Length: 169
Image 1 (cartoon, rainbow, N blue to C red):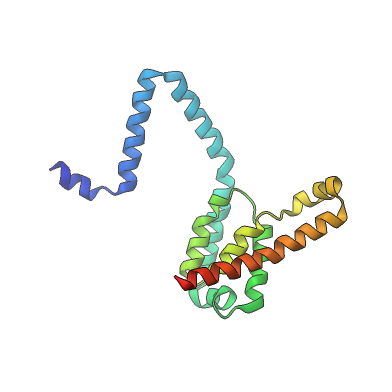
Image 2: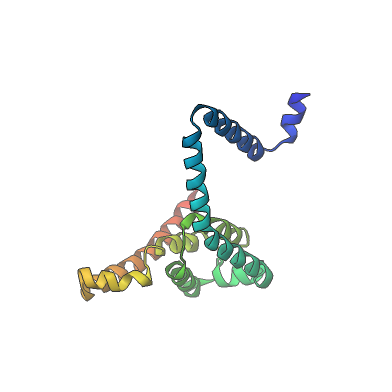
């Protein structure tokens, strides 16, 4: 009977139940530790909720307005230079924790976005427009311009290499 019940419950729920049991055991052993852990969790949750909302809104609107055909045209196999441009600019403009973007990127990949474009997007997350003035202040204009151009160029090279390595598999 227990085996049949466990077969019906997905691994996600089993994991959640195990974590809850561990928290209960820890609460019995050291309640203050569990209270502090939950407070940190709530603090982190408050911090990431705006980004979660943004990413889910983007996913909603991408599902609403972008069908697989449009995505393949914009960022699929035949996208060419336009696809690289979109990946680079989107990576630079994206904000928030990177793991929050994974669901959207996975959704775009399922609809036909090339792996190389996803790699370029992820690589360009290191180029942050709000940080450029500080970078210029500490390192100067020449360094900032050169490193930014190199990061953009290497993001495309990285994307091409990802495409080649994944095609060879």
